[in-house]
Amino acid sequence: MNVRPAPAATLIFPAVNRLATDYWRTARLVGEPVVLAASVAGDATSFDGQAVLRLPMVHEAGFGSEFLALIRKHAISRIFCPVASVYSHLQTWLPAHGLTVELLGDSPIRRQVKQHGELMAQARSLRSWMSSCAAGAEVLPEIEVAGLLRQAALVYGESSDEKLAAMIAIAASAPAGDLVEIGALMGRTALVLLYLARRYQIGPLLTVDPWQAVHAIHHDSPANIGRLVDEWDYELLAEAFFVNLAPWSGNDHAHLRMPSVQAFAVYSDGLPIATRESVVVPFSRRIAILHVDGNHDHAAVKQDCELWVSRLLPGGWLILDDYQWAHGDGPRRVGNELLEACSQRIERAFVCGKAMFIKLGAEPAGEG
Ligand SMILES: C[S@@+](CC[C@H](N)C(=O)[O-])C[C@H]1O[C@@H](n2cnc3c(N)ncnc32)[C@H](O)[C@@H]1O
Image 1 (tube, rainbow, N blue to C red):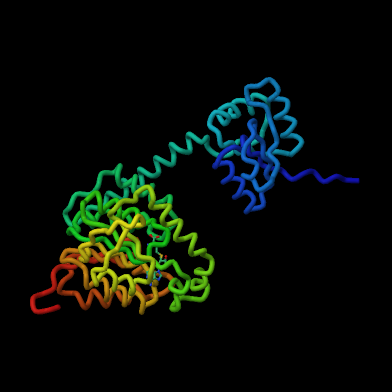
Image 2: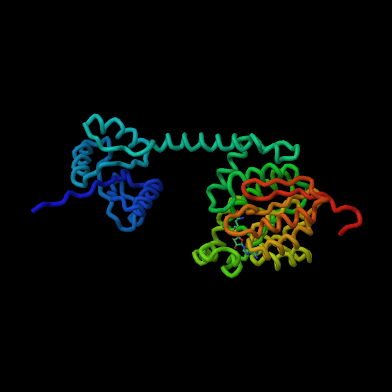
């Protein structure tokens, strides 16, 4: 009788940290057979009940024989090693023992070095054009731009590096006033806005999002896009937003969990708006930077702009998300209508990272 050989597997060793669980999850997703091993006892729940085999420490006497036995028994052809010291040991140990097992990727340290290099290169490349958005104002140093991009990248969201870079640039020329974001999702853009608000002493930040499926549906978009809203757990989304902003929290940020129309009534009527700790935030009710990124249906974007742009200060910036959008033309139509209606007041306008940026001057005498 022929016994079929076990399929070649990847060994995750030592399976003890986040890099290990991340690799294991991806491997499961793509059906890659994985064997787990470690030299110390870890959290048994990390791998959904999959056994973690025990090996001696790499410098202990029994390591070599037990490691070789494990490799043969499980037909290991590749090793993912998420610990720098063990990686470095295996790098010499494997060839010294004539093993052709592949050590996957870079060492954890080299990976950090590479990631940091890529981040700085991205910040440098974005900074090379950011001054053209900054209306003559000085752009933040490379280190700060990179730091903001890094923090923003930790949060799931829809603002690209290009759009965030343009936001960082325009903040330098914003007048003093409130910052308002309509549509906050998990807070990727909000945390950048909050940093900029403090950095340039612009004013407090108001974020608005009802986190409710009924408001998130895009009726104008193809059904498969509209249906994405069902995938969210909206209470989790709200919690995740506050978790993501917690390290940055202060008495200069408040959130209104309601649709933008309702929030506008609260804002424009001068009703108190408080932080999560119930401290009333001193909003001036005049906006320096407005980010419209809520529901993208034409009617919704139009209403958001009609309401909130009326509160924009002379010299204030409107950022209209997804002016270029693959799933509908609501933001583009509203953007074009606005450009036409406000043509006398436009100090600057450009599209970056698919968003439209407009700096509006004072209304001409006799209007408004
Ligand atoms: C594209 S996401 C926002 C992305 C976010 N600005 C970021 O930085 O990742 C759109 C958000 O708009 C919110 N939204 C939908 N309808 C809204 C409304 N009427 N008022 C305010 N927010 C709304 C949704 O709940 C969703 O979180």
